[in-house]
Image 1 (tube, rainbow, N blue to C red):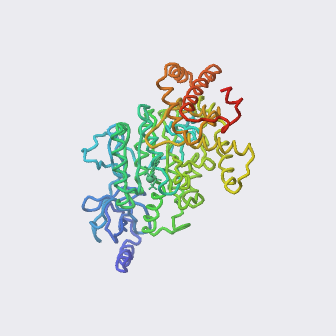
Image 2 (image 1 turned 135 degrees about the horizontal axis):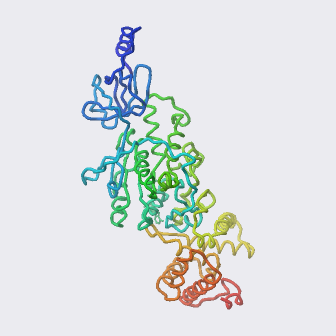
Image 3 (image 1 turned 90 degrees about the horizontal axis):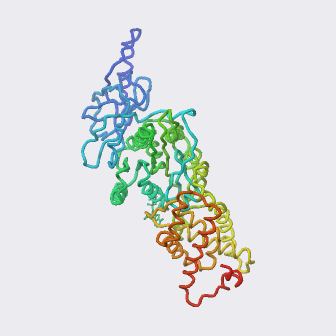
Length: 523
Ligand code: ATP
Ligand code: MG
């Protein structure tokens, strides 16, 4: 995209002609060079940053660079349709998207234009894509749970409404699966969802939309899709368009869950755009303001107080790592902007532990205040027990002579890992989770071989959903949301009943394999 000498000469000539006279500012300019989604336009000295301009052929562009004598414009369309010398008009507007309930159930592109063939979006309200994040005084603390329905996440790294929790991991480790499960779990919970796909394959997004439709989740969801085939400028603005849609609901007192899938591809799109605009490259060739790119986006997630509408935006940004390296540029940036991360590892995923949550490196810095009491009571030592297990499991591979204490930690850990496994699209509610966590806490699962944990979990859930006594206990627990001393005893009894039933199914069962006979008799 070389700038021709003749063009420079023309600009200089114009400047000489106008020397001394009042500067003439014009509403219209001419395309100097164009290519790869970026145009350099001369003679538009009145435009402002981020203004929307109109090329011939009805193609829009956004002003990204203001330079002496020229402006750099990101073309929101096919730049092949624009030619050198074409006129460019100002619109006097910044880029906006339609917002409101009319968007529910729709699939829109990165600029908020519908692409699902269901006609125009008849919304009267429009919000600018770039907006200032809520200030300190308009925010409220995070104290309500944003349930994902995934046991390991809600128990170990709980998320609160208004929080930003990063989902990070290598490719194909179940990142999208977690975000989609979280959206599915909002069914009937009065939470609106926005799924922003940036640089994804169109087929992947189509599958997600299909899945959400078949599960009846599109009625409260909007999909913003800027796939990999879209030009970089459209990929770049898509998450801002998504959050603008979410902000409308937040300001009207509603809770919103927004997923950015994923911000690594967003950063790559921005890098491409910046390099084409001839901005100087920095670390890993990203421009210097790539931190601001994501911080201004993620700061727009908040829980605001009543005066500002009283709603919330919970953000689940996704970042892809290379070979598990969370200390690379974009991962560290986004980790520092968010309130915690869910770290997924390939080794766990491949060994069948799904969700492949790395409990050591995953944290939630604010969510635990939002956890319901029942779950909090029953998940207290879970993270520690898992940490001990993983540490010992690594060591025990080398030695065969293990003392009793080490053996029991290993056996207990194996069972916890099995109980935390969860299939895709099967969210569970918090109260049911607390029962599974209680069984873990009681350590009674040691009486069963760890391969049977899946069956035990299923039997446990069946029992509490179908058996009369257990059902009424579950109901009571749902009302109280916490384990009283009495509930504690009664629920324990029911868990033991299920355990014994499962033991009965094993032929030739020998309790001494798992513990002492006296202990077994006390069950
Ligand atoms: P990409 O890097 O390609 O975006 P990703 O990290 O988003 O991948 P997913 O697409 O969510 O990963 O999942 C990868 C595969 O693993 C999918 O085929 C998905 O169905 C499967 N998968 C994810 N989570 C689970 C789970 N809990 N149980 C079983 N299979 C799962
Ligand atoms: Mg994915």
